[in-house]
Length: 392
Image (cartoon, rainbow, N blue to C red; front, side, top):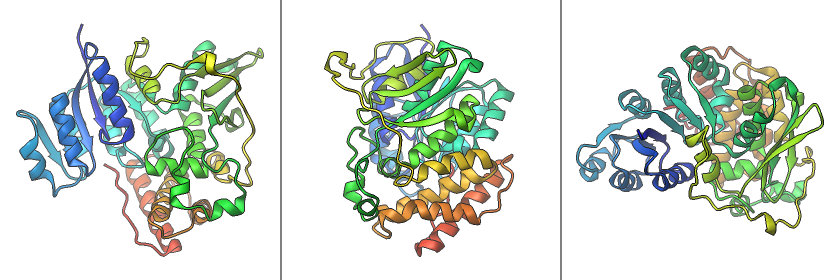
């Protein structure tokens, strides 16, 4: 059996580490061809010594010499802002996993799409920021895009139960985050520690805050509409605090198909890597006998207004997704650094979107220009330093 060669963008993050656990559990099927990280060169070095990739990349230039000294013999090294894209260009791979948080990794993802590799997308931002461009390039080059995000992996699986024209609605489930039962006034003054105390999932800091504001559902609405060609009225959000059902597809004959599994990202990662097969991986198996009650409720839009931004981005199109994503990144970063209260994140993003003159999304340059504009506007509104976009 020929092993599938995998490049992991964002190998030192939570999804990247989980992907490596899946690969380690399936050594006959996969081998690591390349690893890309941002600044955590020590962990990148450990991963390189364990998995022996052909090459690694690091965005940060400064630790490059130290990293080079501890890499295994024969392992190449690329550094700098375009290093991930260079890794994708230079290393032969069958699958590229994009596990980089935020807009970072967009160039490398496009590079993988244009080289007709299977692209497994773990984060929402590529399709939110550049969905039409990525999907057009994928169609042009015959590239297969497989979602890793748990909700979209669940949709991908449940939608196999019928044709697209037989789908009436889809439901993206949401845990509700740590503030599901909090009042709006209490939420507005939530601390960083409280926002990061997710009741179900163990995730990175940025995405955990997005879960607390439910901005993650806004981004998922956009991703679902673009990836599966759905209309906004077909995509609904359903709060399900147990996080066992990850998405539901409703067909026009009255049938509902749902995907259930433990809240363990190694389940959708395994499926994305092994599709169309299903192989036993390292994820915890759901104990159905332990399920005593599953709860569902509609989201409270008054307390979680971020959800409406997702529908607005789909309806507006153009550069709106790039603006919402970039503004949210800056606002979340400011909150995590103690510069703004929790309650200021979503209103700031909406204000920036309202100021934006929607442009065309037909080129990476126009999307990155909108991204940088939104970052500057958000920083100015919040009175914080503007951090440039990190699209690599």
